[in-house]
Length: 496
Image 1: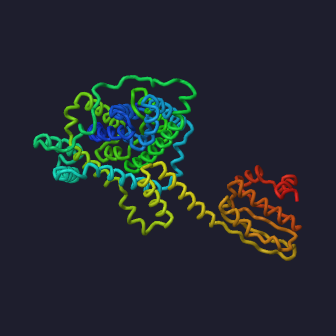
Image 2: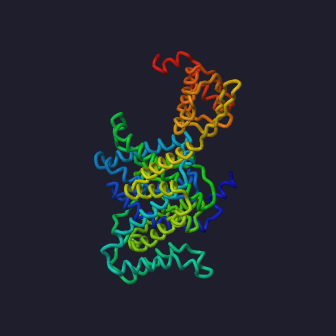
Image 3: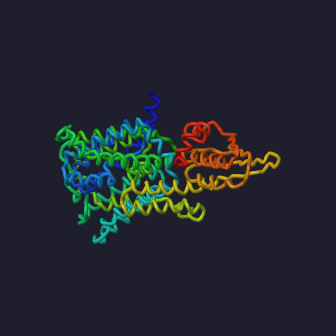
């Protein structure tokens, strides 16, 4: 237990603290922007980011990953806030947390293994594009000072790490934000700042039970929103955890992360915050700034609330150009540039899945829809590919008037018709042997196709023997097969 605490909390103190500060600075304008999207006061997003980041540091399953209020979640709240108000949003946030905790106990985090690498790559590339596009409003219809500040900021971010000795000690994004803030204040530049995004809260969050009637009507109002928030939140969190796993060459407990997200959202809802989830952009900022442990998320949340409540006069002076430079760095670092070169090497089906995921996510601004489309496409391509890896060979024995059919490969819903068509039912035979030694039957559709083959041969007067079934195939055939049940056979053919 002590070793576990040392590894997660104390093994990288300087890196985690500095990275947490960078993340906190980058979280402030995003939390305000997401609050505006959801139609609530900026403090709702800021309180949520503080609560979720601090709580997930203790209960999450992926050290080094940052969770807070997010745009994907904010988009799902708009209608609820507009029609029913903030209190119902807080209630929906609590129910979202409950659903996510249940998902953890049901071990739904393990479903990530069904998401193909092409979908993950598409998700990452789409998010990189969305992060970049989100910066464009800050770079349009502005003075040349903004472009100059952004360019200088990018120069600091990319060049400072090459400075001998000190280049590796201080995260370059943190230096970028501090340096450009000082420069803007010293020069008195009239450019957009964090203070222009909205008013910062002047008090710490307090315990707040949602002021809604505890009845079935309230449940019916918040239920569909909570389900949607729970699914999108877990999906984005699981995808982000997978990416952080790759970046840090470590593994994470996805089911624990599901529970952690749920506990964090319940905490946010009880302290006046909206539902949130893992943030890929902030998580990448954290990792690239040296953050690896739980301490980085804790520092990010703690520094965030200290800055917005007690140091608001200073925080309001941070130029948006500095944060735009950081987020452009994130979008460049997030995009999988190797995926472009891999288009020539990878199969066409993988490329289609990746590109489709990117297009759908960017077009809808909904990560869940994009990933769902990508997973469905990948499943269809995989099923089509596997269905082709099935063959039926046969050889005839004249003395016994017997034909032996040897089935090789996987028989399931996509290959069942091909399986049936491989048999010649018009051939006059006394004996038919169906050898399944090198075959595997996966589902009810496959078993039904076997039933049809056996029954058709028997109707032609042949004796049919099935041999070589492996244990799994035998189990599903015994459970669902009907070719040895006269009553069921009669039902199958409509009593004729």
